[in-house]
Image 1 (tube, helix red, strand yellow):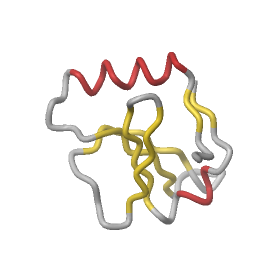
Image 2 (tube, helix red, strand yellow; image 1 turned 90 degrees about the vertical axis):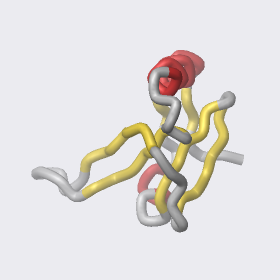
Image 3 (cartoon, helix red, strand yellow; image 1 turned 60 degrees about the vertical axis):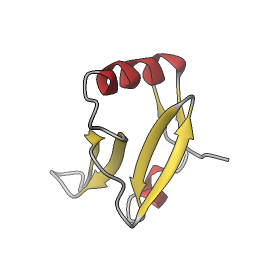
Image 4 (cartoon, helix red, strand yellow; image 1 turned 90 degrees about the horizontal axis):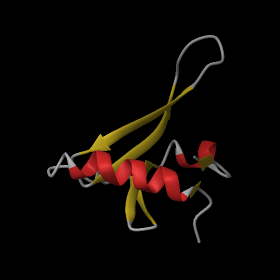
Length: 79
């Protein structure tokens, strides 16, 4: 069970990005400290799976989320 959801359009969009990057193993989703609100989302192609990554499969897409970001992303929906 995944608590992060992606629309079909989001999955298709990320798969097209990854199709142009054969070295990428998936999409990395995270949270970093930034700006006035204190945090910002990050979303980047990932070249490797790191030791503290949670690997989430959604619609044939590999989503990687580090342990520190995981609790902050609960309930997220990407479209």
